[in-house]
Amino acid sequence: MPVRLRKFIGTILIIVLVAVYALVANTIAVATLGNAPWWGHLLYFLLTGLLWVLPAMVIIKWMAGPPQR
Image 1 (cartoon, one colour):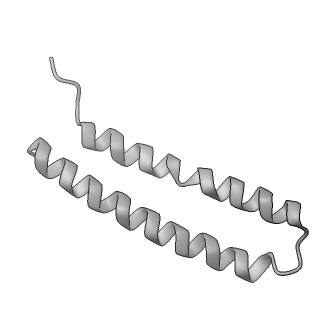
Image 2 (cartoon, one colour):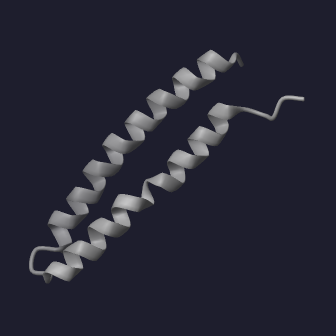
């Protein structure tokens, strides 16, 4: 697969990942954190704010492709 196509597909995947992840994380927060204390909100959003990086790293690694010799 050409590098330009791989990067285009990876960019679209990251945009979709972030949008879907934000919707799911906020839906879970609204459903479960209604009466939680402020530190519960802080911990949840800190964790979910950093957690999306893991699947994004996999996509970015795929975009980079195999190492060239």
